[in-house]
Image (cartoon, rainbow, N blue to C red; front, side, top):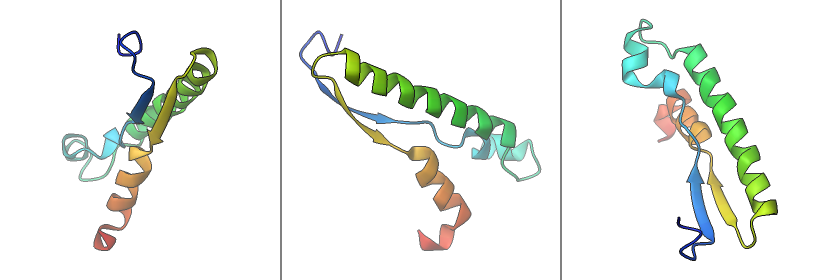
Length: 82
């Protein structure tokens, strides 16, 4: 619908490490749940491929991809930096 309305430039954020959400960590003795994070990685990889395909197939479609998984992972791994 956005494209049909004339939108051509999009900002797309991938998923964060969902296994590190407080609710997931609570279920895993305070640690991130690897299986959930692995699912985020798979989703993000498929998302990126789909966006690349759209940019080749849809005239004028452009996107900026924000790696929220990497950003949030960095914050979790080294909170003192932030």
